Length: 462
Image (cartoon, rainbow, N blue to C red):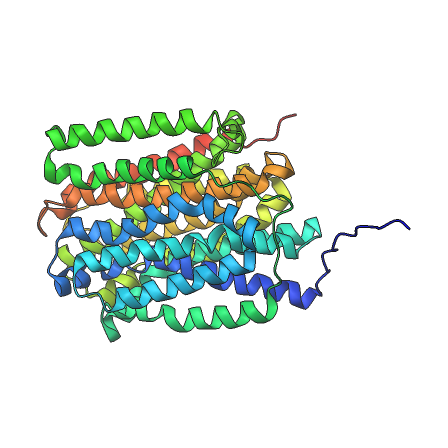
């Protein structure tokens, strides 16, 4: 008698169940993206409430994005090993608990620490949600549509964050920026338990702890230098020591990853120009967005005297532009490839930045709104082609890793954008802030130009 070993066959979900899974994952991703930008418009109110300045406010934002960027890839590996739904639900719980601590934080230090823990929870949501969606959608065409929806929702969530944040701060105060997460977390936990099937990777990757520690050190060191440099002095002994640490950590990370059999980040992927261009494009787009949001928040509230609600409403053109153009961009990618929408994205972002390079205390509101609209349109066009370029330019077996690296690049761009923008205006008073922010708008335009240049690498080879 011969024993036969059978392997479980993945059940095929009904169409309604598949799209319900997508909706649950999109809900969590909307929360992650929203929390990246919703705090921006509330920064002046947080600073006033806790008695802190711009530097601590920068860390309030970047503590979240730095931790999120550093842990994204490892969280994906944990999900493949221990179960995607399990890690996804764990991320929701950690994110929700940290949100409650943020809402009750008695000091800036407590808020920054809780924001870092929020980043840990968020890192378990972003790559894991995408893996759940891919696993639930076996048909390639349906899967491509789902990924387009997923990318659009994530981009939209970041664009509408300031509007939502302004309304919450105006009505309920800055702590409501974190209380609002609780009902969403509870809803996502219940829906994921009911509708999301458990799944694991076909082969669990080994955790790369040295690579993880070094990657977090690299991102934290470079972002920390940019935030603290204006305060400690760019040539002070502390700054020079930080440069040395950041450089050693970077070299150590590259050396370690190039010699591991299963590295955290497969550096060989960057040999493909298409993939490298997508990563650079992701950094540029999210740096431009976060420079815009921080400079806009400080300028409108400190220099122009806008309320948080008015400052949030002023970004409505940005949210509208992203909302309209994100799904349009996904359709364009399917019809004509990623290059045309990337060119449009770069052109609109560059035009928006150039509108404000002569910003002063009396710049007309229509010009401000036009600039925000242009940047929002550019942001809406950018996400789908970047995701498509990163994933489609590599073998299918590497698509998950490529997506995780691109997500890391997005968060790195967010952290760099906040650090650079904050460094420009950290010592500027309300009267000088507009002039001090002008290099930031040049940086936004430069990010648009970089996106145009990366579009050239996205052309399919003949």
